[in-house]
Length: 310
Image 1 (spheres, rainbow, N blue to C red):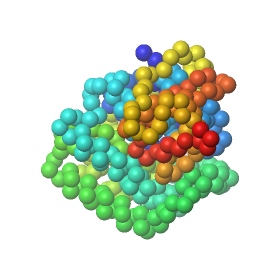
Image 2: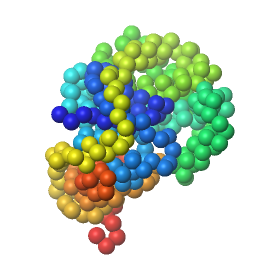
Image 3: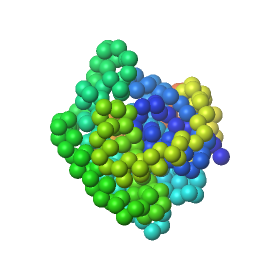
């Protein structure tokens, strides 16, 4: 079975979500560190345009968005499960709330002046400015909360979680870990990277204890790999994961399309449609270094458009 190759950087919150899932499932995985900001030539070689972090590569198949990647990992290693049968729906609803609403609360909360020294360390001012410039178009048009608004919202959300955990449960949905724990968990991990601001969690002891249990899963067995080696893996691959196109969804096999996120990082990835269901869209594209690629996106949160003249 081909290795799972995670393209990430250490301070990426959504990458931490996947690293913890690897730890939960006690998996070995290949670790490719990528730049925090553009240019990302080796990432774009794989995705065709999508620039969010992380992505996961399996041979010449590239998977975007952690909701889809979590299902990929689950299919390869079903136990222990991320989707306990008795609560899978609730777990996924809570995960989506965390990956969207909670995430866009902790970002303005944590990136306020009190948090910047911890997040950027001894980085020169030029690097901090470059990061801000890179992210400005990433979320263009989005109305962000002020730090004061985000602080109030985060207190409210932590209060909800504290009440949710008041019955003594060890994990957010029933008594077993689920995808919800890792989605909420990576948000709090990012907050805790800034000690001055992390004190907000101290007022919610059940949340703090729960988060410690999640972090204790660790990251599994990470095996370093370079991005050049990862591109060579794609180029050498001889096949792709099975895909299908369901009828009645408005597109046909071979349609020239672009796929892009609808929230932030709206960089389109062009390609030829090879897979489409209510859960996933897959495009075929060719790169001079990586060869013939299939790039997978979830349907939730993404837009498919036929290219002009297609």
